Length: 302
Ligand code: NAD
Figure 1: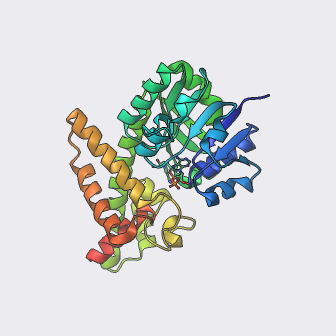
Figure 2: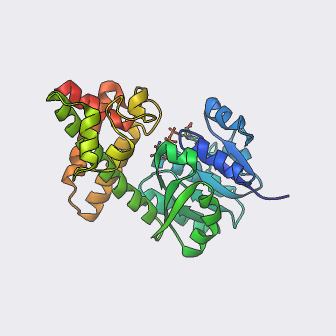
Figure 3: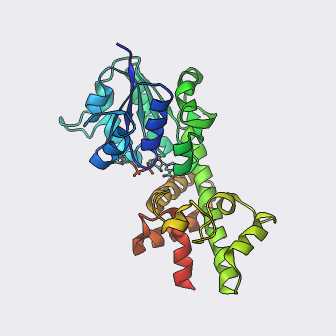
């Protein structure tokens, strides 16, 4: 029997990623705690099961795409109870684990060390590119781990993404991801602030966006993810900030940046301020809205 790929976590990102693996011809058995997430991939011909234990039975590779460190640690290492011993305890030696979630570098290293002790290999492979990149299989993977394990994962990652970077040893993929997302938060807040200032002074945000895209203020948020409703089609701002990358997830990533900065003694004044702004935004009930909704915080303040 051919070994399949177990895919665990079928949310905004994991769902389309699992579907793309299936489209590329890989046999996928997928699962999620949420029935609606499971249903979203079942309609695309992916075999869906109710539990992670069922999904990994007979799998050669396990891919996870979960919200945060605690979910990943609980899945693989368990919670110390007999009811949840963690998946690593039951995977046969030689199984390859690829975690694509954005989690703390220290958590990624902890799970990788535990995997290695059991004769398993594990790489961290967080992604950039958002839900559109997940759907179009154009994600960027930032991978940490042994070169041979990274090379073995390349054909699978190539079915879900366009760029695969080997960032370094275990945890390095997460370090790269945390740095990237801190910068993303900073330029999204800056872009929202500039657009809000322009609108408050009577400018058309579409005209202002075009001017800044051809000027020194140009950046990814302006080009691909304009936070002002109605300026760009197909982005969360133009559908009430639904879908996309939740503000709570951005807040989590900025917390990871602060932890990494504290651990290394690095100064991140703007990253720290960005985390405070997203904390206020989430506390005001916007945690589930896409992170570009940070514009609303400025509009309220105005
Ligand atoms: P999501 O909340 O939409 O999906 C996470 C899924 O994991 C949920 O469906 C949840 O039910 C499931 N889950 C949680 N614990 C589980 C378990 N033990 N077993 C099975 N399923 C479980 O999140 P998302 O937007 O898909 O993001 C996933 C990860 O990717 C996060 O770490 C996020 O930071 C990162 N990320 C997201 C984006 C984005 O644009 N959404 C972009 C890049 C990276």
